Length: 80
Image (cartoon, rainbow, N blue to C red; front, side, top):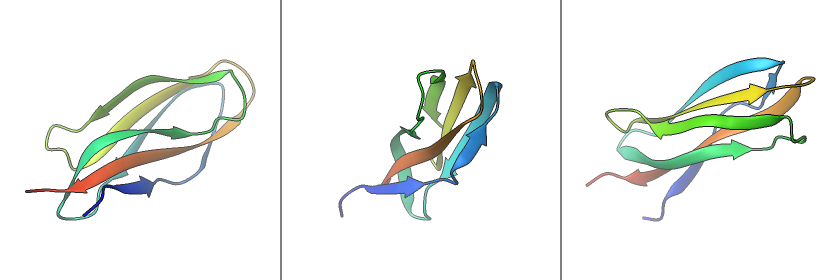
C-alpha cells in the first residue's frame, strides 16, 4: 500500500510560535510531514519530527508578521 498524506486542520497562525500534531490512521506510522502553505514568507517551520512511537507527526512554526494560514500534514505508511 502506498504512503498516505494525512492533512490536519487549516489553522491561522498569529504572530509567534504555534505547534501542531497530525495523527496517522490506526495501523500506520508517520514517515514524514510538513506544511501546506503559508501564503507569505513570514511563517516558517522551526521543527518537524515524528513522535517516539511514530503514531503522529509534530511540527512547530513561527510567524514574524500578520496572521497566516497553514495546513499541517503527515505522511503515513502501513506498519509491518
